[in-house]
Image (cartoon, rainbow, N blue to C red; front, side, top):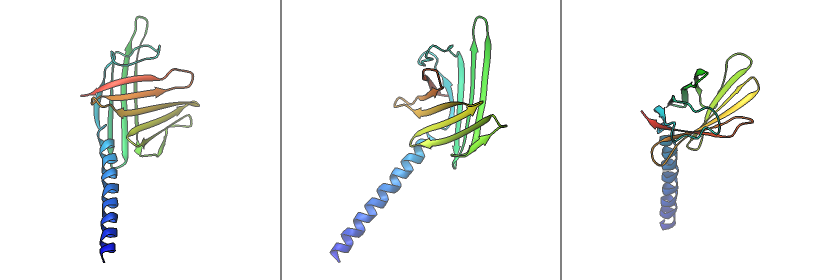
Length: 153
């Protein structure tokens, strides 16, 4: 009887630890929810034109992920704005025509968005930093990795 009590206790502790870890991961996903504003002075543009303004809005609601990005660059000879949204079930591929697809999924506490357009794949990794800021790593073929930092609005 005593052995059964110990085994039951151990099993209960293991189950509790599993559920606590699952809740921590789910809570980590929700911690990126909200609107984030670019901090250009903290960001590393890897030789690319520096963005003056930008924002990212993330909303993960019951495994349906929306990521909306808005960036603006105003240079001496050119100006451009970039706005793009990914919205769909976690790990589902969103298609817009034949040449564009995007997918958002969680790798532990990092939100990974992979977008392919005209056979060029860009990978964005969103993560929460210890100081409460959000870091966005952008990987593009033939370019250095760009590191953008954001503060919650």
